[in-house]
Length: 113
Ligand SMILES: [Zn+2]
Image (cartoon, rainbow, N blue to C red; front, side):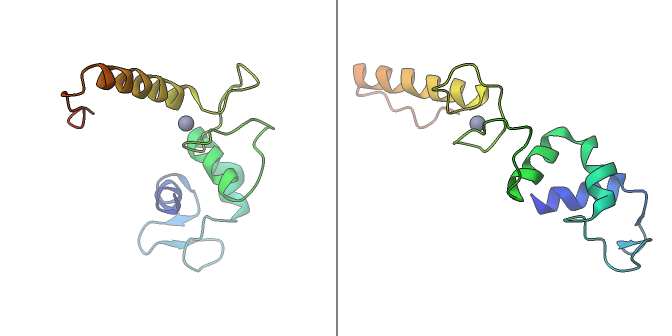
C-alpha cells in the first residue's frame, strides 16, 4: 500500500517536487505517511486508498465494519455479515463451485479464474 500512497503523493501533492522526489515544505524526501498535508488534501482524492490508509494506521473509518477477507470497508446489510460485497460474491461463487465439484468429482476447477 505504501507504494500506492507514494504514487498518489507524487501525482497529486502540490508540494511534491517531481524532479527529485522531495517535499517543497520539508525540503526532505517526500514522506506521505503521517504528512498532515497529504492526509488532509491529497489522500481524499482516492477514496479507496484513503480507507486502507486509515485502517493500516489503526483508525476506525466512520465506524464502519471491515471485510475479514480483504480489509475493505463495507456497508453492513446484516449483523452476521463478515465480508464486503465483492468477497461475499466470491465466497458464494466458491461455494457453488465446491458443490459442483463434489457432484462432478472428475472435473478439476483449478483452471478457472
Ligand atoms: Zn472483501
